Amino acid sequence: MDFEFNFGEQTLARGIEKNDTMYASVAGIALPLSYEELVFMDKDTGTNHVMTQQVLHALSICQQFKPLDQHILAISQAIPELSNQTQAIQQVVDYLIKNKLLVKEKDWKEKLSIGSAQLGIVDAGIVIRTYDNPKLLNRLLQSLIEYQKKFSRKYAVQIYTSSDSEKIENEIESIAKLFKKDLNINIYGSTWQNQFVKMLKKEYKGKGKIIDWLLTANDNQYNGGKLWNFALLNNAGKKFLFFDDDTILEPRTLGDESKIIELKDYADLDVGFALSLTEIRNSSNEHNQDVLQTMINSCGQTVGNYLSTTDNEMGSIESLNLVELERLNSNSVIKTIGNGTWGSPRANSNYWLYYLEGKQKEEFWKTREIYLDNIDASNLLHYTKNHRFMSLGNFAPSAIDNSSMTPFASPNSQKEDYFYNAVTLFCYPNQVMLHCPFMMGHLKEKSGIRSNQNHIAITPNFNKFIADFALTLIQSTDAVNPKLRLKTLANYILGLADSVDTNIHNRLKEYLSQIRSDMVLNMQYQLAQSPDAPVYWQADVRELIEANGKELLQNNPPNLSDWEKVESKQDCVDKARKELLETAQAMELWPDLWEFCQTNK
Image (cartoon, rainbow, N blue to C red; front, side):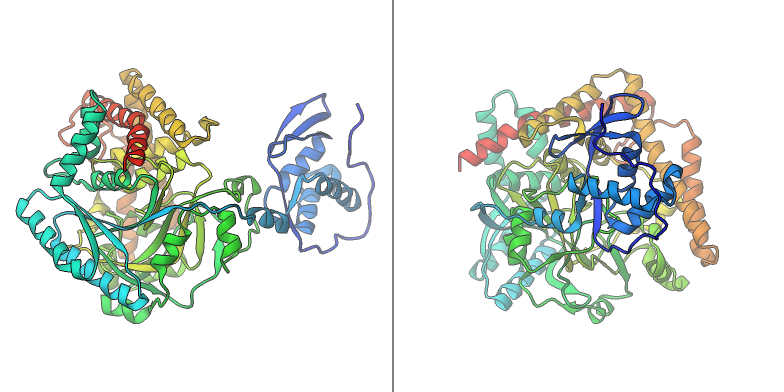
């Protein structure tokens, strides 16, 4: 068989010419034809190309966007037979470009920016979750009034409340009524929620237990996910802004608003430390743009529409892998929008602070007094410098496109936001979370003591376990329909629940071991990278290593953090199987509940 192209044996003495135009190689499947020949199928176009093993090797070296001269140099250095054969390599690179196996940065960005017909998605306004905190709700609504006056806006407001105390719920309703003269408020308390649940049970007879699991509050238990689920069902087919009662609608930035959109996925947020809210305000600027309207306008748009209708521009994609960037296309939908925060951190733990690098790490440990304050993360700035197209956020989004079905938030325990984001990504593998470069106020009434966690091994809860399980399965189905994808995930979870006790036990044990070993490895790295760090920081890092290393060597039951009174391996297995079944059954039913609510407004 004749090759379409080969490197040949030509050698050219001249050096590699400078070429700043960046290229990256496409993804594909290689199938052997003989010892030397193979057929390479471009996964995007389905086009077959016959080439040699040597050409395929060169193609594999060019996966990251880099200037063409760097690709040629890398090929020359990586393939001994081609050392100094610059002209031959250049000829093959030209062939790969001609056949679109090497993609130019400009062409890829232009393809990503192609707009499409915009959908007319109904805007439901602002959704607020509130628990037993009438004072916080009062503060949030007051900040909304000030915000609306500043930007001459008036948003519809939906308040979903949950309380163990009838007195507190009445107080929350009284506060909402006080603000009705300035705000367009509807409150969805226990009376409305009970009627809503009753309606669903009447429609879905025999599914009452699952509906209760999704929507009925449990005494003395965190019910944030249940309120979130009410909002999703009540606003099926719409998009909305979404805030908790500990938010202050006072957006702040650290400088001029960036117009750059970064495409790197799973990027960590930047952190700044302060000793007081006064210091936070003095070190940041009040944002003078209507970010709420910007977020709700952007939510639900395709990436192509967003890029073609805003003045934001994509940042450099140098060194980014084209295969990984293929998660994005012009029709990727901005399903959620996030932002940074100033004030209290959103994480309940402080483990993440020990992963800081560079100047942020130095600010973290600056003096012992500052370090002790920073451990409890009392006053933080948590932000991105630029816009970011991310796949997965760790926190509850500030805007949600619920025009097509999004999954439920886990109704029990915390990390319900991470669960929601992970399962949304499973349902929409090409979706985007647009993270914006401003910070919204986030002030809890009482700050938790996070420094106590330095002495214990990291232990995730069930919501994080099942979310991480879902993330490993995203590529396991080719389905596009999000409802079908959610039911597919339910089947995977049912399969795990149906497995033998030993398998469930070992899955839990493997998961905990992986998280703890990662912690040990990363903390060892931190120590090695910071030999001159303050002794108090080093002591806490070693304590984290010791606590997690010790737990790794114990043969304790694989207990998750939200499982109380679980004393044996069998107890863990039984608890996991029960929660796996509940989660899977809810995933099977949820698309039908959502569609019913969308249809029956």
